[in-house]
Length: 150
Image 1 (tube, rainbow, N blue to C red):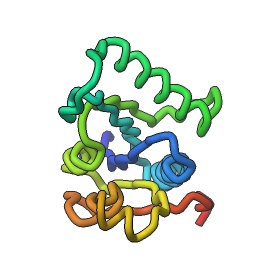
Image 2: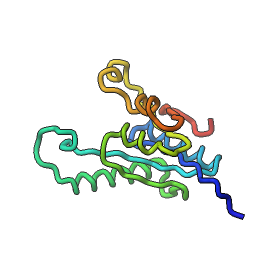
Image 3: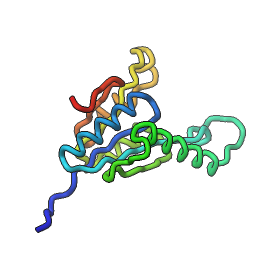
């Protein structure tokens, strides 16, 4: 008999930082414990998308670079053994907006904590801080040294 219960989704932001790698490990461990899936989201944008001035940028080149970076980040965390319940999403845009949108219907949103100082956080805002304030589900903020067993 099949269960009609939906599979819990854990959304995790992956940006290449050590804390995002720790967040991905934590999310994968937690997903195994609850029988869920992990949606790893790597967000990229081009300078022209933000209105920066500068030379014209080939969007196909930027997309290819983003795909390569995302693959390298997943390899850094999981080596050659990607978990069966890992879903990969490459999204163009603002990281906090993309993660907040992806949090709709998720069990948890998991993000890394970069550990920037108060001045940078006050001036720029923090992806983890914005996600904690605006996500549609509970948010787990994982530090760089987090042990997934805890």
